[in-house]
Image (tube, rainbow, N blue to C red; front, side):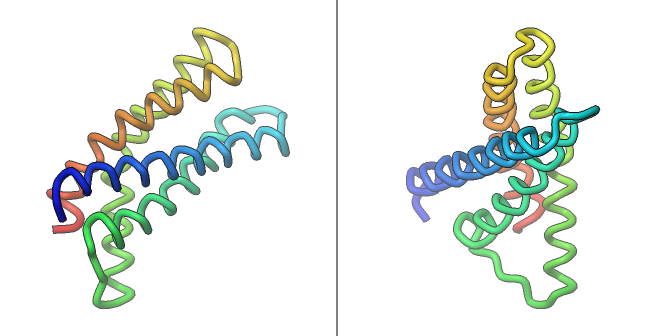
Amino acid sequence: MRTQHLVILYMAFAAISIAVNIGAQAAAIYVYTGPFSIAISMLIGTAVGLVTKYVLDKKFIFLYASESANQEAKTFLLYSVMGLATTAVFWATEYAFELAFDSDSMRYVGGVIGLIAGYIIKYHLDKRLVFK
């Protein structure tokens, strides 16, 4: 796959995953506004975004097919582990925006910025360590 096409596709999938993540967070906040609602919404958004991004990356970016359910589980686990550091970047940025601005919309802006930075890092980790 040509580099330019790959970059455009990866950016599109990142945008889809960001929209899914932020949408899931907004839905979670809509449903539950009690104690720890922001942390819970971030966790839900992260989980939904992770699965979405994994499926898209695996199939269309890295053209990877698992040979067994066991290999699929290991690949998803490794993909998830690679996402831990990048998730920390995302969460820290989103939470910093929450603390700085005390605004839902600015928290989401921080989330988008954190997700973009995280996806750039994650691509390189996945390329070298997950989908080799």
